[in-house]
Length: 242
Ligand code: ZN
Image (cartoon, rainbow, N blue to C red):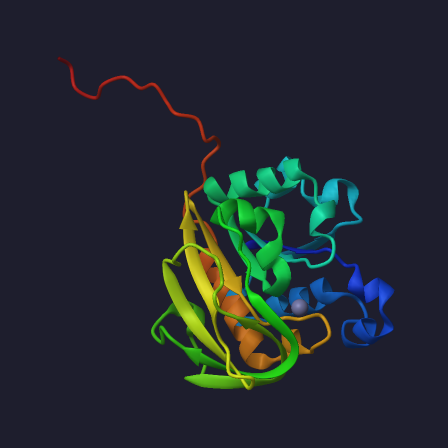
């Protein structure tokens, strides 16, 4: 069975701001879904989308049980995601669900729960970004050049208040002088979390070929090898007779 991908987008900017709708007329989630649909590492995958406007944000326990990798874009509506929904997502990650968190999702409730830190950073609108591969042999960077540029991206700068990542895959450098850990991997329980910094709503970042390659590779990489039904501590019989 192929990887079951769910792309979640709060889908607010695109409906409220014409200049954002001009970049993503049908929503960021549709562009991401299309990118995954044509990615060579994701042949056979199924891609669904959900938004804040769906009942229960489209993120019920039943939906998450049928999802291998959840991709998350959010910005202005983090507070409208119920705490219990965020907890449900985080618990599914601990039980094996793969999670890809994009750009301003650094401040989403599920990401902050899974990091356990403030996830604060520096920011400034509109800067040229050069991304450098810091772990060139990693499967998430397969087919990605040693460095590439995004002509306009929102500057996110260090210090980024996250726990030390298990692996930092990309370092972003901005024309204003700042640097950022722009692609990071974290293991949480049975699950893996991939954070990716580019993807501001006003910029055409999710049409960029390198970005699409990285995100498709990341979805493939964080797909679970194993899932668990519970987070309970088990009282077990001894294996040996004594
Ligand atoms: Zn942004």
